[in-house]
Image (cartoon, rainbow, N blue to C red; front, side, top):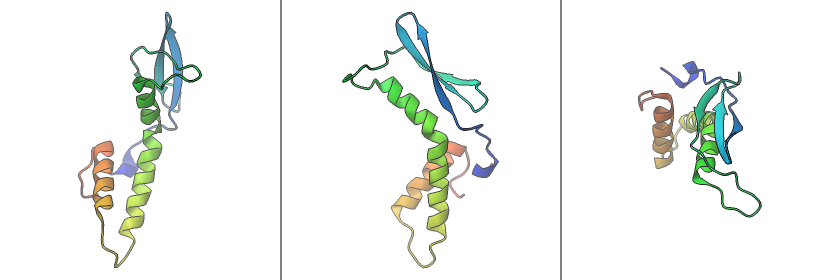
Length: 106
């Protein structure tokens, strides 16, 4: 399966629910359907440190945009005729392959 064949139903969004006094983050697809729910945590107030759960949720929500950026960067690097490929290209290809479930030879 190539990256172009994957429909992630983006953009993804975050909704926060409460379980008593705890907060729960819910990642939703573009149609508003739940994709994932977090463990309970507390949303930070002014000056509080960002909980690891919230940081991970932000990363998950941004994953489709990050994947698009990696694909664009990979295609740009491929188009650079006469320039040697770098370790960066290998890292990009590995990330795309992991995100799309496709082989490393895109």
